[in-house]
Length: 191
Image 1 (tube, rainbow, N blue to C red):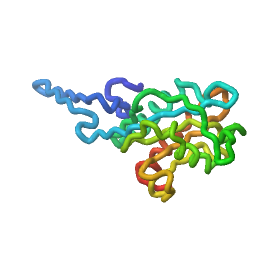
Image 2 (image 1 turned 90 degrees about the horizontal axis):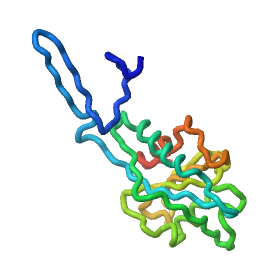
Image 3 (image 1 turned 120 degrees about the vertical axis):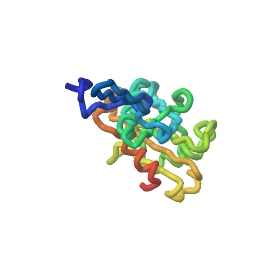
């Protein structure tokens, strides 16, 4: 039974501790933090794009679920995903022709350049904080990551993760560990 006595598959919260009790002639008890000093925090600043006709591309509680799922996925490496500040709900910027980049209800591989170049989206960026965007559907992908190693001038030293929503009334399929997967790309700096 999960969480029962002697459960060897127990999933502990990385902020908690594990206690072992051994009974011989005297009872011996020892506790230690799950991750101790080795715990790492990965900070993300969350932006949800607004649909051109109104509404957001994803529900706010779906953002929280993705962050929790990513923390659970990376727990064995003692990595905790933490949101920096409150979720921003911003209009998508226009492309170089003056058209809203998500007017067609998709987010393509070059739309991120408009976001990385837009002053409203750049405001408040912090070094060491990943820019996490929830976008409309991304053709042929669930998400993608753009890191400094991609050598794109407008990206600079920043890392961006773009998670496409499945257009299911703003709900992501939580069975997929999309954010956790993309963090793998961001943490090892490889596309």
